[in-house]
Structures are given as C-alpha cells and as structure tokens.
Length: 263
Ligand code: NI
Image (tube, rainbow, N blue to C red; front, side, top):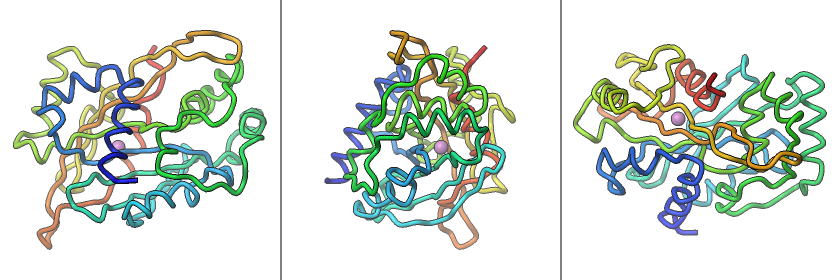
C-alpha cells in the first residue's frame, strides 16, 4: 500500500472514534497540518504482537529506532522512524497479557482464542478494528479495573489510538496550543501536568482526554467507552542540529492515560 493512502485511510477511521479530531485539526491548518506521530496499541498474543505488526510498517519503509518499557502499565513499545522525513513517526506498544492478574488473563485468552497464528497482515490491519469478539460488560469492567489499556484495546481493536500535531511546525509554542484548547473548552489530560516533558528532554507533549463513543458489547448495545484522543508534540533540536525523533518514557506513560474513563 502507498503510504499516503495508508495515512488517509487511517485518519478517516480514527475520526469515527475521535469526534473532536477534525475540528481541532481545523484550528491548526486543517489537512495540511504536519503530523508528528501516530500511535498503535496491541496485545503480545503471537498472532498480533509487536514483531508481527511491525512487518507492514517495515514494508512502508519504517525502521525501528528506540525501545521503551512501561513496567507499571505492563507495556513495552518501539518508536519507528519513516524513510521520508515528512511522514509521521510511529509509536507501537504492546500489552504483556501474562503480567496481568489471572482473571484478566483469562478474559483476554478467551477473547483472542480464535486468532490465527502465525498471521500475516498488510498495513490495513491498523484500521481493521477488532479481530476478536466483543467483550461482555462484566469482562470490559474487569479489564478496565486492572488495565485501561487492555479494556480500550479489547473493545476497539486496531485503530490509530491518536494522531499528533507537530507543534514545532506551527510557529507557536505548546503552551499557546494548550491555552487555546483550554479556552475553547476542550478537556486536556492533566496527569503529570497539562504539559509533559521539557525542552531539556527535547520533547514536550500534551493531549486531549478521549471523549466517550458508543460501542456494542456482547451483551449491551451502545455502551459509552473512551474513544481516541488527539496529541500535540513540540520537538527540539539535538546538539547535532537534527530534530529529536525519540519519545520520553515518563511522558508517554502519562499520555497513555488519555483513554482512562473520566469520572
Ligand atoms: Ni503519542
């Protein structure tokens, strides 16, 4: 698949789960806005784990850059850099099922039981939605109680979890962007502060909180669950004059919480 076709299809799919995304993008230049990175989530099941899902990314010209660990969230991830500088970075994370409590492991093993393994996927897998049956409400709530990531992924499956505006391409600061969004009433992720990271770390990030969308569970129709969110990243130049292309684990860990249920 052509990389532009891939990102166009990915955006259209993402907007169905991120009802604010199109309006927010419109505030910063619309379709011409530069996208810093796109993030995907998966389980470490052999049919869909990170080393399986990265294959279509490698075929699109991406290469592995840096690994990340999030022990407290039972996640690991890789950052991928594109062959063409103008394309977004990609952040692909996976949940280590065996690190969850036994009950959650049981639920996920049941849901994922019929996934074919080994599997080969094209890039369209990243907007293919759920490849397994919907969880019941009880299953969803049990997953959410130990891992909001597990609950999100179990109900939604494969989509862009978030797109990210490259604030450094806008000629404004991330603080300006945050002020603008806050003043317009958008709810931002405040875990660890509205702005995560620092110029010293070469990356500052902020994000909206995912708004609820209605999903059909196995036993409840049109149940409201957090959908997708929009992120904003301001990158800084390294000493060698190149823009930093990595991520900051401490910031990313709090950004994951953008799909937590809002009380
Ligand atoms: Ni991100």
